[in-house]
Amino acid sequence: MSTTAALVSGVILLKAVLIGAFVAQRRRTRGENKAREEQRQLVHLARVAVVGELSGGLAHELNQPLTAILSNAQAAQQVLARDHVDVAELREILDDIVAADKRAEGIITRLRRLLKREELTLRRVGLAPLLDEVLSLVRSNLAAHCVRLEAHIADDLPDVLGDAVQIQQVLLNLLLNACDALSEAAPEDRRIDLDASREPEGSFVQVRVRDRGPGIDSDGLERVFDAFFTTKPNGLGLGLAICKQIVTAHGGRLWATQNGGRGAAFHMTLPIFKG
Amino acid sequence: LNGTIAVIDDDACVRKAFGRLLRVAGFEVTAYASAQEFLDAPHAPPPDCAVLDMHMPGLSGLELQQRLRAVGMGIPLIVITADGRTCQASLDAGAVAYLRKPVDGPMLIGCIERAIATSPQRAQPVRLAAGAH
Image (cartoon, rainbow over all chains, first blue to last red; front, top):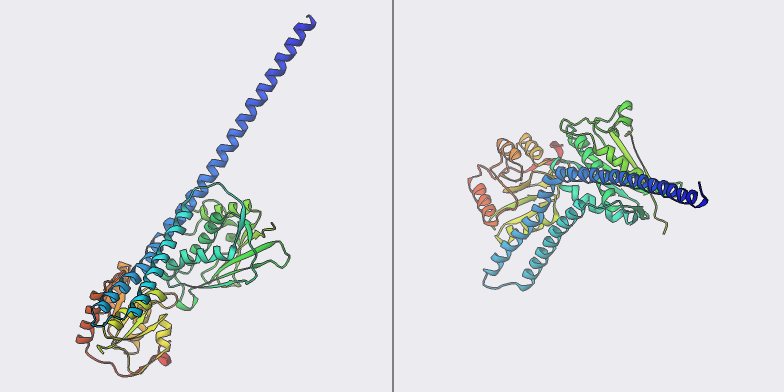
């Protein structure tokens, strides 16, 4: 074989190897993209399921400002029917109507945000306002089950690095599960405690959701995070498994313990935002 | 005044709006943020009628009804609820009417007027806190 022919063969061989590697890489990338897309869809579907669970409560939560608007407007009609109209009273009524309307708008905005389908995006998240938002979404569900919520959020709670919507998804799951666990509880035990504070060691925030329900046995403490493990008659058993994936993707941890012999406690850590 | 009304609702915005609507209509209104708050308050004399939200954190509206019955306090109760199952349960427990949110003002006022007019008693003074927990 001449030198030229050998060179051409070498070039062809090199091209073939490069094309082969390129094709393999594209296949691998496509496979990874597909897996990532499937994971994203799964997380989104789980979030839609949470919104489904919230829907009754959200309808009630929207009914509250609507009730206030209607009662205030009808009170204003009565005030206007008097011989002497008190303008200051009417102004106060109108202020309350505006406030109730804004409250309803806030509920719809939060719901829309929760249903958005987006990639996991880690950025600075104010955990304290996020917790307030979560509590406002779940408030009516808790009231419907006559469950009280005691929130203890540290004043110096630092911001975390995370995806606000996905953190909300985890918190909603934990709170709705705690609420379900209290369905048979006596009135004085229908209580959920939510604590959020910086971990003593430094670079994580810990959020705890504790209930006073029947609790979880020691075997179940690990298994609750397995896919398709559920204690609910109509549950799919995916909620906590996906929650764990979400928290792990944030670089945090999610685990369960007994709540001092009285119910269950779920603990989540999230990394503090460091700028 | 047309009568004394207790408004028991955990939502501050709804409590204020119901209170305003009823005051403008000529009632004297006292508002309570929970069933327990109502139970803990002295009622001498008891209100002529109570407007009671069914779903509240802690003691539910239905449980409050049962405790009032247990101490023989026959206040006419108008229950506000969105849940069909609790409507029937509250009527069974002695509520005179139920209404769904958002509640129509004239309808609520009409219910209260009828409840007071047909009430068999303006109940005797009872202090609930002692016996109702």
